Length: 293
Image (cartoon, rainbow, N blue to C red; front, side, top):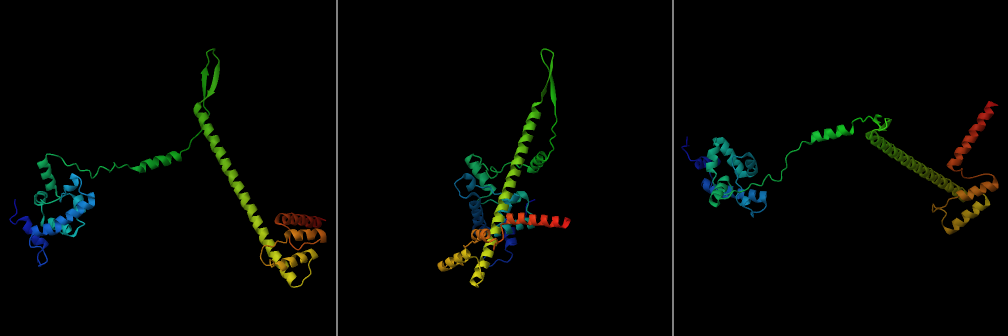
């Protein structure tokens, strides 16, 4: 059943119920002013240029949902599709009505006139969908599966009737893999222990250096206040004071004061950490012996 009112008039009345002087006077003017420019923008955006036959004749189908989605980004096409739906136009009515540049009608007419088929390359670069969830599950199961090693021997009867036992090759391969894994674990543990030992040694050195510097600064302050110190230490501090390097922070009296302890029988600096630990252990042992007596 054909409509009494032409589709162009019905669409124009729906799109412009109260036309103003700025609105197009008819649907043909609306098509030339608004719809065709939007089609050209969409084709240029989608294909990039018009060097191919497919770009010149994109074959936009105003009933095909993906094409509607592409063109629906534009204001006038969005209103046109809403008018199609509100007026209840059928599939054939829309196809027969949409006969302008860039539509399916233009491509079919070109193919009929030229006797060729315009190839649609839109989905050529889209590969088939692969559900990788199953692949990940298989990989996870393979990595976390339990491999049990068993001793299997194959009994082979020799030509002279004697029996000989030969271990299976699979067990040998599994044994080699296990030995390799154990060796790798051992190397990793050894490297980790070495790193921890180096870090501990560096920490001890830093602690000793900070302690020596702190005590050195206290000795310098005591000397400046007039307290009595060994002669060689006072001479050394006096020389450093004359040079202006007494408070530079680079003076370490460890070696000088250790020598003073040897000559005078006392020390102004505490012994290093290792020596302190040994002395503390000896003192603790002596106290325990006295308590036992």
